[in-house]
Length: 395
Ligand SMILES: Nc1nc2c(ncn2[C@@H]2O[C@H](COP(=O)(O)OP(=O)(O)O)[C@@H](O)[C@H]2O)c(=O)[nH]1
Ligand SMILES: Nc1ncnc2c1ncn2[C@@H]1O[C@H](COP(=O)(O)OP(=O)(O)O)[C@@H](O)[C@H]1O
Image (tube, rainbow, N blue to C red):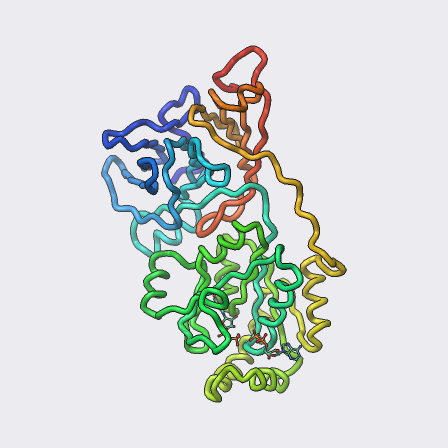
């Protein structure tokens, strides 16, 4: 794909890309990127579909990620490696989506699957706090520290519920501690691109689904992931920006004591976990994956150190959330222009227009994240329309 961003949509003069009605009645847009054409469409109430032509020939395409539901048409604007989709007349938290066509993730998946791939990612306003990855050997106290944090700051943190093929312990609940699943089911879901990362740990498969992380961030909470060192390495290599913390035991003897006292594993499993612990600790300390190492000797002291890392020490109640911003609603009638990293949405008939504020400026300069998962860093402003009555856009 060429270096220069290509911006070719139906209506180049106005820079607009409003959907056209196809023969089937679905509203479609066509976006040309190099020698490819991406036809994106959907009948109201159904999920969007993507068709791809390369040099005029239709090709098979694998669509990864959760697809948006079509809603009365959309506009499409090509950014460098992804197509911005503005859904008309849809809810404010569901109006901006991205179809990634040439991002690093898509290129990697193309290599893996040996076929044309596109990936969906929902756009989210502003920047949520980075997820926190907590790793460490079995029995070191990760679960205990995470529970303390969630108990003290329930509205601030949410736990990413992993999938695992291991059997549940007596106190563990499906969907709360883990999604307990079958190996064949999980392997199929991994193939379908539903997992952000996965690893074989102590003889079982564990993994973080994209949905698990999205559920937490959509609830406006900071996501906590309890995953092993291999998983942390995969997340480091992914588009998910996170804070990486490794928890170390004060000694191997103390680790063994905690594991045995917990009484949740058979003797064989305890020995396997202890054998793996040495290697995990070496990797945790030396691999360069982790931003911080915490020693969990005295639990309360370690918890205070964790809170310090998260900027929470001395916080009795959660810090106030920033004031909610104006919400964005893209009306059915609008045109779209692109100037550098700004998308200008000219709302032709809407509530905003009554207030002489019919332009929405969407800043896509500092997009973060993306498939698999949400695209963050979107910012928008509602701005005044032109006093000379020009309704055709700012250019
Ligand atoms: N890569 C990866 N590791 C996970 C995930 N969930 C849990 N783990 C790790 O799997 C290991 C075993 O977890 P578990 O069976 O709950 O035992 P415990 O650590 O002794 O409580 C721990 O190192 C967890 O951090 C996941 O989604 N992905
Ligand atoms: N600092 C500590 N001192 C003594 N016991 C601890 C400490 N931290 C955790 N524990 C205990 O050690 C056991 C293992 O902790 P857990 O949180 O289940 O570890 P992990 O999730 O890392 O496998 C639990 O019984 C827990 O109560």
